Image (cartoon, rainbow, N blue to C red):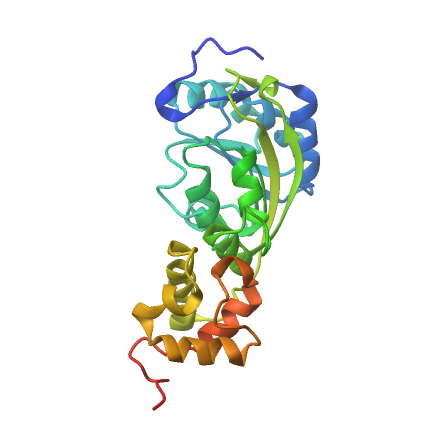
Length: 275
């Protein structure tokens, strides 16, 4: 359905207009009757109308008040659709579900604006209690980084962080012609399933900090890249304990190896330091 409202650049609006693509995305979400759904960035409603027909209870979050108003007038009378005007990053999904009396966990679906897709997904995968799965359209390059494995050119901190919190896969690509206005890049649909992180609490914070330092200096060997958090010799010993040479670099280690390295390496105050 054509919208009378022009797309606005400040919100990164590229609306899905291909009906077959919309149907594939909704099918990939596999919503069951009565299940809660959170759609982020419904725009002109290409996904929203299909999601409303699944029998799920849908909360659509739209930053554009004109589009939010139009969707409310059209779909709220169905009884299973609520439209909220606001920024998806302002509140956790769990809080939004509670405010609308929707039962967690929810299926999160969205054609995400390229400029905020990564922070939205990084936040959503951490809400395992509130989110069962995420099916989202993002820039193809971002999709590849989200699910990349060691040895790939796309493997980096985002890949590692995502792997700590979710299992992910790229489902299919969407060409620029599937959107209005046409973006200059190809998009891809990803599916992420939140899971328990590999370690709890403070240990998780330390693991993420270690991974971040490692990839910030990805051209360096790990003992050099991590030197701010312990001596080179300590990191060489830690690498040896997980079967890695001191010449190893960040992009070579799997998520599981990073977990093992964090456990074997020197602590934040040198509590693992050896003479």
